[in-house]
Length: 462
Image (cartoon, rainbow, N blue to C red; front, top):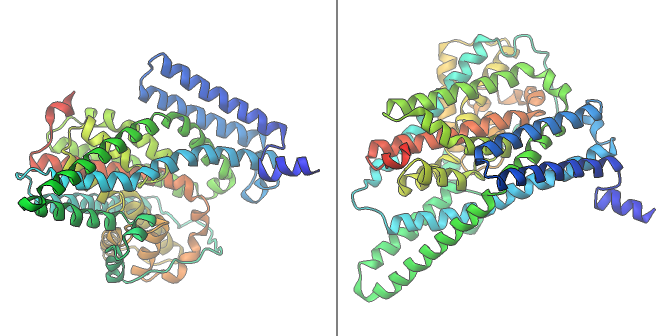
């Protein structure tokens, strides 16, 4: 009895099917390892991993009889498999997130210490913010267009659940919250904007004392420490990224296993429109790259690995190390622009979470309540989406917060419960949203660097 309790409650290994699934998972890992040994490209291994994850997820759902959400916990082996898939997938994401704050601290300070005097910081700031917010405004417009065109919510049965609206602070309160009054708290809460502000103060403080002869030795020591820390963190990042294909198998399978297909079917139109918006925004990003005189196919090919991890990991912040690495090493973006814009873009101007998703929720609720969706309503939605994309920076549950801000901003705050059926399948939606978030931030970085004249075209075109 005690042994069974140990296997069931602590190890989650009490069912034969659980062991069978872990053996299959091990076989998938072994195949990926063989592909790596045979020098298959990283992108090819990522596609194989994504396919494995999808097939494994559907197979597990089929064996379990496609259970509903409330039935899953009563199928012992199914619940245990979810635990182990979640463990492997989340372990990788946690390792990546472990590197986020060190990367920002060392890379941003290093960039400021070594910044080229020819770089206009004012232009960098203004252009980065412009492209982040501009793409978010386009995303919100795309969300409105799709929701109105397909009548999202018009033929939907009102489903009122127990989902409560999140507390929405005033815009000024949220902006004040970004100032890192407690730097340690800012780091633990993933307040990326707050951490960036802190690094700016440290970096410019270090540059100031470097100009004084009496601090020359101290300044050199500090610069060497930052350089050593940066190189160490980069090596750690490259090591962790090697395991990305293995994580993708588990992340993809766990997403399909954790969400009953019944719930997905109930909100199929919403899911379809979110994914259609994701595809359209990728097209918009490629168009912006083309308008800046760059080859969009090269951009697509070099960003594909980062987009795939964003799709499966569902974390814009966790993607930051890979985004910066891709921008600097593959796309030739200046480290100053890459670190600043990508860091800012991980929490500000999120094309998916703050763009088309809250815009769709606004039209969805309006149609449920039979409120006319006219031009003034659409314009208000876009404005609230853009302002909200600033206000949600560094706040956990970004998409839910963005939806709360949107509904409150247009006067629908009391009807947040109508989104319960949509929030029930949020992980499925979050995959598309995160991919759009990361793509938008990377596109903004490339556009900004091209306009500043610091993009290395030779590296980009390789």
